[in-house]
Image (cartoon, rainbow, N blue to C red; front, side, top):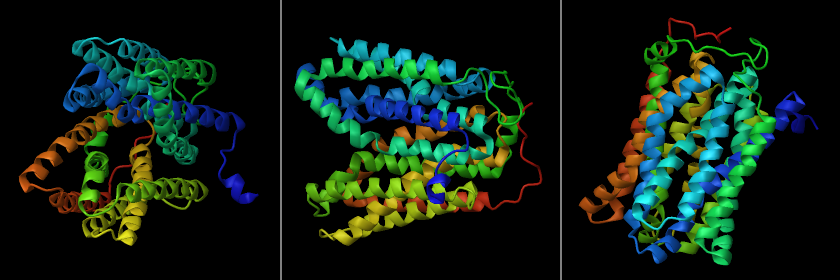
Length: 413
């Protein structure tokens, strides 16, 4: 019973809020991100577009979302997350309707540019900002609990999207996916508190201005730069593997069915690790978690490099380490700045950090495709990814160990 209680937040209203936001995140990630891979084939078949034509607006949307992150972050710190979440879900619903009716490539681009703005309101950035501001010391448990929901989003929405596309066609499937954002909009309007929430410092609903010096403090803090380096290079590796992993492993002699089965292990590791992190949330720091994340990522890329000749043990090791890295890096990226700087200006700093991180992530597939072309084989990719992981781990560990003379910025009152 005590173990179960350790997994829960103290207040019932906070537990309800995290649960409802988690459901919204399952639908948000599943519809805007994970369903895309299933939609590509039917769209190409009907529209006659190449793979590059279908995927380029999606990649461009990620870049546009990164470019507006600083503006959205500042807005969250001054008026709270609720308004941006409402706007995001409304825009997402409209974007899905426009996408379902596209008859030209220009219209497809317009739908995805609108989706780019929607993503900033429906994915994790405003939710993390809300929880960190509202819960203070308990934000670590709340954020980790929320990521349990995102961990299962792909496993729910990939088969769900396949079924509704098979049953109704891709255009009607898009309308169904868009309707989920209307449901999320209703949940946010009902469940999310208005205004900026600061645990222990303000009354609910009171506005809290962002501290203009917080970006200066962040820029002068070497630990923050360590997080930027770790998150940027980790994002580079994860995005590259999302595109190139299956071709790489099949080139190494693994059957597609074996790889697909191994993916289940990665998901199981993520869920188990996140439950453990929730239970032991008071026994570790985010700074230490970042070091572990960098080392597990390095171990994963080494295991991938060594994978050969259908060696299942090495594949299992890689998938386990890769799953662990995914869990750890997500939590480090969400909470490191709050630990290093305090919660004042949290969303502003997160928004500024998202710009370089997202640009590096978006560039990964093209960069690795070029490297693969130069080497005339996917075999050149593992050592490159190994080098990137080593740089990420060394950069973070070096910068995270720097002693700071200044105290963290305190939460605004």
